Length: 114
Image 1 (cartoon, rainbow, N blue to C red):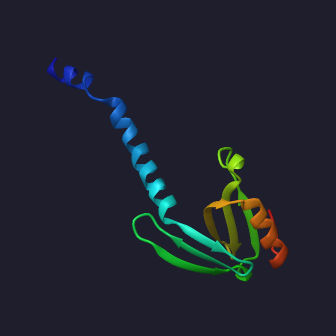
Image 2: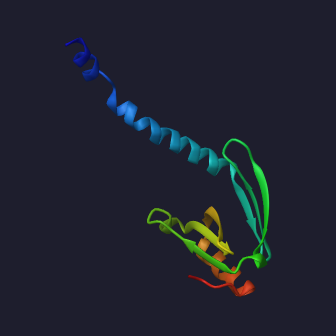
């Protein structure tokens, strides 16, 4: 009888929302600490959640360039830029005006869109 009273008093809402809170904090930190610069020849990415790493990617090394947007991202013209080469994929999240950037990079590099 004592155990059933303890189970009834547990804060189930708090317990089940904890993973979503942790994911939200991680995403917020990622967005705050990530920046990128995209030119016609390269992508300079400074990214990380708790530690930042600097990456340079040459666009000419990739044979396919595309983008994707969710229903939430589309009204804000944000999305994920996707570059592929030899089975490897590079995802750059949170790119503003992603469609324009993808089209302009495709025009300069001759990469394909799928």
